Amino acid sequence: MIVEDIVNDCSLRGITRLCHFTPSRNLIHVLSSGYLKDRKTLDLEARMEVNPTDEHRLDGHLDKICCSVEYPNSFYLDIVTKKELLFLDWVVLYIDPVVLWTAGTLFCPRNAAAENGTLLAEGWPGYQSMFAPRSLGARGITFNRRPSHLPCSPTDMQAEVLVPGPIPISAIRGMAMITERQVLTERARWDTLGLAAPEVPIFVAPDLFDKMSLRDHIWTGRRPTETAV
Image (cartoon, rainbow, N blue to C red):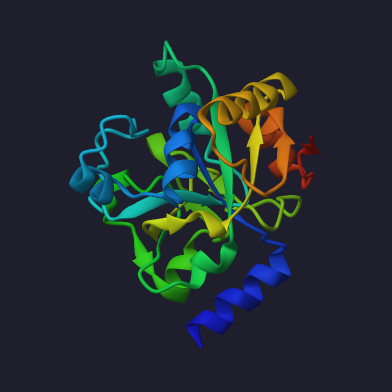
């Protein structure tokens, strides 16, 4: 019944995907290995060429991959991109929403690291918590879900879903980048390395990388423009 509840609610809300962002240099490993890997797997493999987005993982679930519903956690994305001084390009991966009702998936109404992961919950109650009428977020800020709020987006834009890893590349349904130039650069890099380009749509979606623009879209019930290239 839990699976059916989540599936039905996703349909009602128009949820089509989860998002996971990563530096574009990590995408090379995803394409070559065939998997988006969790921290535990990467540590066991001692993959030094893969750079974790979150070095600390205060949520404590190293066997899971941090995702968000429909749109990226752009507030955290803004923080990590400003810390990265050498490799400036990032990519948002679109993941099949089936992982929302996969066994072992955990939900958090705010950033999963909040209170050292103690807010994480499984199943229908955990899923529902992301869409509560009111949600207490970072720095004591309360988010009230307005009537205009985009239905597919959690009440707190930093709400996260921890998905058991690794995630096979077959579950990646698309990806977004900030400019068309970045898309061309990535494709050229794949060709140079002899990697097969992913057979998924690639979008230019600058609003997904701009926390204030994305917030304004979500709060006023407008989906950001995503242009396939």
